Amino acid sequence: MKINCNIEIGLKDKNKAKKALESIKVDDFDFVKSKIKNTTIVASIESDSIPSLLHTVDDYLSCLTVAIKILDKD
Image 1 (cartoon, helix red, strand yellow):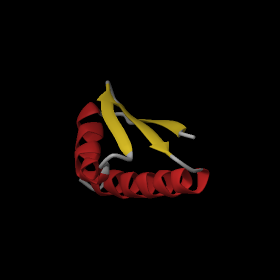
Image 2 (spheres, helix red, strand yellow; image 1 turned 120 degrees about the vertical axis):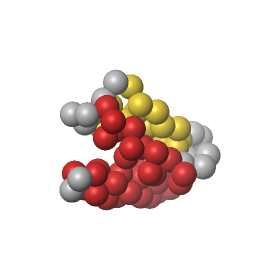
Image 3 (cartoon, helix red, strand yellow; image 1 turned 90 degrees about the vertical axis):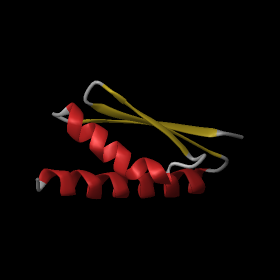
């Protein structure tokens, strides 16, 4: 069974969204497919189990939060 989760994070600035995504995209591997749509980071996550999906979502959002906080300091 495959479990899917789609996440959309809207930012005010397209450049900031692009930089945030570039900084965490290296960790996507086969777990996450992500892209920029206007000023929104769109991520699709697929997993074989709910615990694995939750772990991946938690990790992804943690990394994205750190990236955005760093960019906000600029």
